[in-house]
Image (cartoon, rainbow, N blue to C red; front, side, top):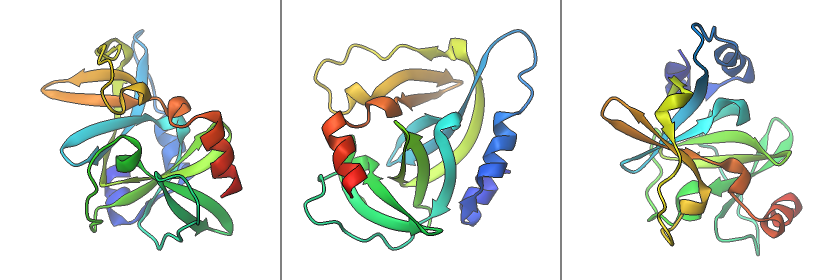
Length: 176
């Protein structure tokens, strides 16, 4: 389904919309998340923020852009800034591979691409499995964490896209 489409090169907004509208069943509230990997870490993004997932395309560098901005892409006639999520979260750089993807998301009414190592799957998990982020103090990237989900033997770091950049950085992205 979505994972196979992501591996084959792209996921449309219509396919994601189908996932969003899946039956919630029971009385418990569920959260639908798109999971992606950066190295050995597994991150999750609220599916309601995800517009689509695309294969890597050529990214054009932008002079004087913030360090975490990889550049811009032309997505069906629309110029979209692409953020290197590894850079933004303070992680080491990595080679782009055949599995690398750009997750196109809406943040503060701005459409941006998030460069990730791979997209894993769409999960539908009970809200009760998401815990508040631990008090990590000055850990790099901790300010971008919305919560931590426990699924069997896996830990998912749920990103808070609304905290991904400051108002000044948002203005710089819009200018890009």
